[in-house]
Length: 256
Image (cartoon, rainbow, N blue to C red; front, top):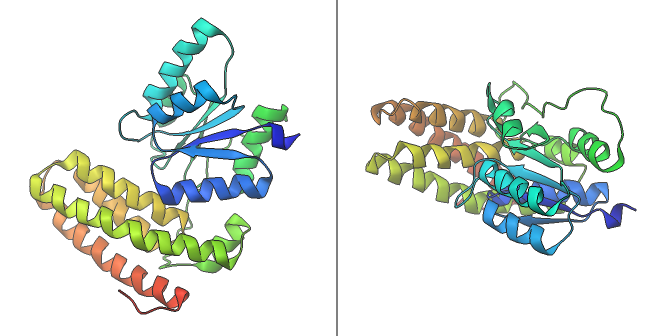
C-alpha cells in the first residue's frame, strides 16, 4: 500500500533534500525530489503524487508561489493534494503565511522522522494527530559535529552519514564564498539567503555550532548594515574551520 503513495519533496538545498528522501525511504514511501516551485508544478502535471513537502525559500519560484499556483490549477481541474510547508525559519507568522497560501500544515527543519511520519500517516491514512507537529528544534548544547546523533535521528548507517558529510564539505564552501561576495556587493538579501542555506544544512547534520553561527549572520543581514555582518561572518568562518576538521577526522582524510 505504501508503494502506491508517492511523495514529492521540493527543496533547493541538496543536503536537506538528501536527508528528507532518506527519511522517506526508511519509512517505506517512494519519493522524488525537485529543486524549486517551477519544477514542482511540472512534476505534479506528470505524476499523481499523494502528498507534497514544500520548502518555502527557493529560487525561481518559492514554495508560497508554487502552492498558490497549484491551488488555482486545482480550482479549475478538481482535486486537492495536501501540501506541508518545510522551513528553517520557524518564526512568528510563518505558519499563518503558509496556511494563507493554501498549504495544509507546517513542519520546521531540521525534520524529525517521528514528526514527519505523523504527518504522512495523518494526510495519507487519516490517522488522527495527537498533537500539532511543530518540527524539531536543535538541541541547545554546542556541538561541532555529532555523527552518532545524526545516525540515531535518521535511523541510518555510517555509509549514508559519510555521504552526507562529503556533500556538506562540497556545498558549504560555495555558500560561504557567496556570503563574502554578496557582502562586498552590499546585497543583504542574497547574503541572507546563503546564510539560510548554511543554517539548514548545518542543522540537518547536527552541526550546532555552525548552525548557530549561520543564524547570527542571517539575522545580522536583516539590519541592512554591512558593518554588522563582519563579526558574525568571521565567527561563521571560524566555525566552518572547526567543522571541516571534524568532518575530515570522521571521514579519515586530511582537512582540505
